Amino acid sequence: MGIPYATPPVNANRLSPTRAPTKWRGVLTAVAHPPACPQRPPKKYQRLFQHQSEDCLYLNIYVPGEWPLPQHLRARNVAWAALLPTRDGAATSPVLVLLHGESFEWGSGSAYDGSLLATLGDLIVVTLNFRLGILGFLNPHAEPHRPAVTNNGLMDQLAALHWLHENIASFGGDPAHVRQTLCGVS
Image (tube, one colour):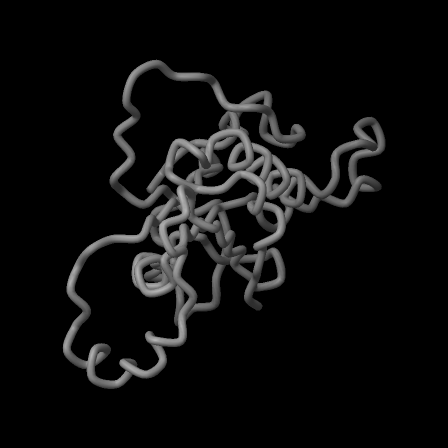
């Protein structure tokens, strides 16, 4: 959780297209959910998105685990779980990238816990944050001296997919299937 896939879009980079992340050496401790990108969610969801920052271009990677299912899931979903595909000893796991919805105005990849799906589906689940609202989808006509500034939120998503393609093998994922297993919610 909280793995940077791009340079933070802050200060001079605030409205700039997505840039590759600064490389780090050694082990990156990524065990906490990253902040959500700045937004104004509906009132009933505001408590979920209290921690916000413009430094928000992070992804969360959930890998299959060996942990016991809660009793209520075990009893109810035994038949369903048996239908899930298995890798049958494959060296890499398939990768599912989940994009949050909410009209590009609010939401966060951290609102989705992919650990159960990763374990039951024997796959890697990735959620991510991308710029929202005016920071992600600025109308280029509003800034005529910067006509190329638009759809940075979509560029963020593409940058995350590129980062995953380059790095998912380090997490046991199959880079050949990152772009083919993209899903979203709205």
